[in-house]
Length: 463
Image 1: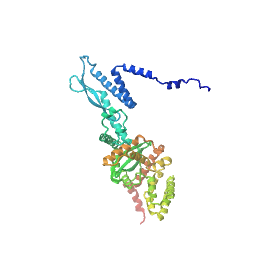
Image 2: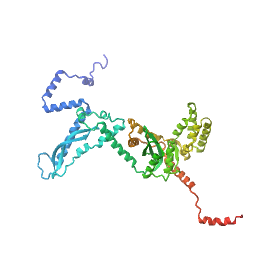
Image 3: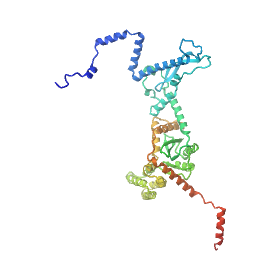
Image 4: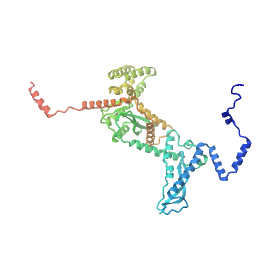
């Protein structure tokens, strides 16, 4: 016999103890002796428990809510059946009402109270709190952004019991759609009316998102602390200059300060470049996205030539010496001109603007971050994710609402950009660059005193 074979195991014995048939029968007899009301309540409790713990909790919670409303009536009106000479309000019966529960509207019977003079009803704070539709809209909005379709919304709710599900409202496709449209319209208005007076931007990124035949141009700002801000968006049939110009004008009207200068990063579209020049001025430094430029150049090449050209492009863009990097790109364009003139022309178009951050002295991790529109692309990817279930874009308003909802959803998860510690230096470099360009374009003013001083010299000069 082993050391533990004859020893009792108290824990195991307690768990393994069985209930005899006699004990079970005795328990049933004791329950049958309880009052009928108690047995009925116990039966309902057991039935709710079979549907799950949450359904049981919901049933208990509705009972507690009813008691809370009745207790508030007692507090406002006074105890029932007791005469109070200075009573300010009286009971006014009950009526049907609704409260928000688990993303649905559930009917309840709510007590009412009116002032003694009968002029108006006394609002009960408990009912007003639980009857507010904001929580319903929030639940619908979150589920829609998570990918739940309007047709399947009712199936995505928490289990609250068959009895409550049978009488619940506001879970139909049309009801969910109305609430979502209302909330996304509020978010669109919030995004497009944000004041920008107090935001000191170091970088402004512009990019477009295609939504099955429609296009939205979006703007993302990065302040001097490295924090990203969704700034605005505009809708159009294509990513054209008119749409981008309208968006930039809206940003300026909302207080965006461009006098000190800001680095603009675009994907390479000529329409965006033209809009920047028309609204923000010709002196605004623009960085072309190197990833878009790389794809455009490689698109003109056969598969066998792409790896070598890709390595040469990235090696040139990785250099910190602006002159050397520009020479390498020009040499690559000359080499491509003989065999692939289309690739060479694509590389030469906006070549210098792919090195703007290098020219401004940006180095290290910040350079890799700002050399492309990846931060803006990340926000756009969130828009695509939340709108993945949309099959048909009915109007421009629908595109704007969904895009704004996705941008604000992305903002919740924003982090400061990589290399943000050097953004203050970048802002100073941009200011100096803009000031130098403005000074170079300013014509020299000739004053009368200057002419008077120069006149004798001109006269003394022999013919």
